[in-house]
Amino acid sequence: MDDCEIVRLYFDRDELAIEQTDKKYGSRLMHLSARITESIPDSQECVSDTYLAVWKNIPPDRPEHFFAYLAKICRRISLRVCERRQALKRRATTTQLTGELEECIPSRSNVEREIESAQLAEAINEFICSLNREKQIVFMRRYFWQDSIKEISSLTGMTQSRIKSMLMRCRNDLRKHLENEFYEKF
Image (cartoon, rainbow, N blue to C red; front, side, top):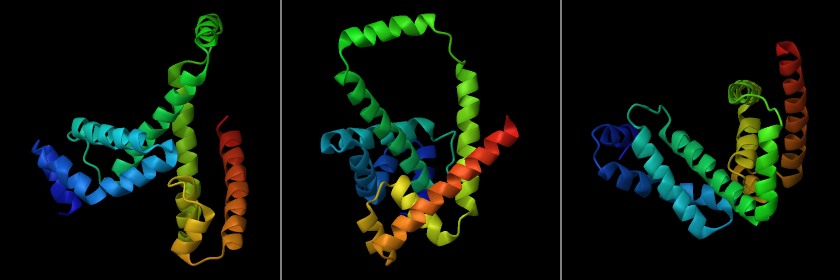
């Protein structure tokens, strides 16, 4: 079943949509989540939560690139699981004291943070679009999919040293791009 048909099932509120999504993309989403959470049970929960989020968001969302839409949601959920796991490792007293101090310390508003986050995302997207196809693939495989250098080498046929050099140059170029973007805007 193609992506348009699956999205149509979501619009029709047909539960077959989730089954078809899992059948077509479940293993790829599990792989992505497992890379982030490093836990199969957490990954399974993240993928299930992804399906729930997609069910709630389609409609009104009508994703143009369905798998990218799924991957973005799954990645965000998986990262939140890792953040929660880290938070649980902190001592309860420290967490309580930190919460109390946060009430006293002025912070930037959520609106400011959201605007800055949106601007940063836009700048990173511009940078990625400026890369040639080969660099885009390597950059995304490493930093979005979190593939190892060895896995990227197997996928692309490039040597590991070439990939490492390419990534280092991309990071340096990204740093310059972000500095230029944010110096111009602020």
